[in-house]
Picture 1 (cartoon, rainbow, N blue to C red):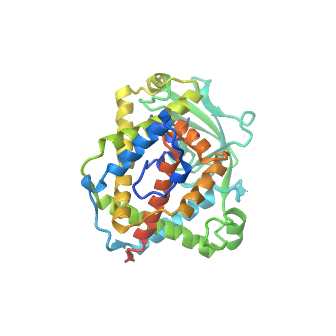
Picture 2 (cartoon, one colour):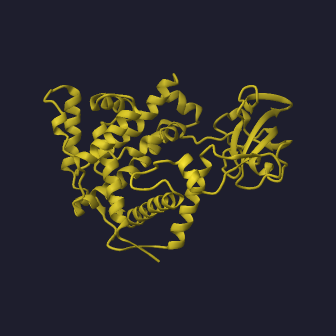
Picture 3 (cartoon, rainbow, N blue to C red):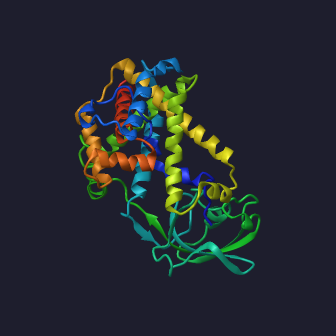
Length: 375
């Protein structure tokens, strides 16, 4: 029986990470806008004016980034873990049907859960319903306590019974709280991936990023470069202090967190109030989580915008257009206006804001990576 976060709807909206809305160092796209005075254009103009009038340095104390020291061993370790994780996301593996289960194994299983000898709704994954089975990484914490640990040491290719119980607090289904349950698990196979090689890169990661060759060496370099950028950014962000948040901008970002949640629930035919009740959450709990997430994202946006302004890092029209074209293709629309309508509905933000900040965030990270000294 899988376990989910109370904040399921937000977790499902992973694209929210792009919503560092608005920025002062944006590309000149004024030629794309007309002079109409519709309420939509007025709202957009108001949002842009808020962005342009904010001096982020009034709200933060920027961490020193003149020289960023990182441990080489930490970089290498994270690089190896990320490569392994990416390899495991491919279908280029062998199905091993012998041996015993170990921590970290990726298993394919079927399972049937019974309480008092009777199956219960949502407690099974059977071959007739899910021919491909369920993929579970042992140690991921994706199932209730006792399920994954109980599989360690069991023989692959055989069935076993797990006698465990539901947690005393189980918001996904309070009726199951604290109840003993028996899961009969069929361990179909363990997935085994090969080592990274030129052929593996060519078959699975071809043309993974511009400027890098389709070789194991270049793929490793690309991942390592990405790790260095992430670590450099985290180093500076952690060293920076957020003293306060621009009220109007925080309001915008909170809206952008609520919008995809409400949109997702609407598609499921569920009202927000009903969803919160099912998750044993109050409206106040929800608002607090939205505010916490919004402040986290806005704080990051304030830091990288301040660095961009200080270092005169700007976005070129070609850089903007490259990402815009990517989104037009991804969302199967022909124009930026169509994309704006989708983004407003999905994320509560214009595409220009999202694209500008996505590009600027990347450029700032690339700049910070040049300041890194490996120990």
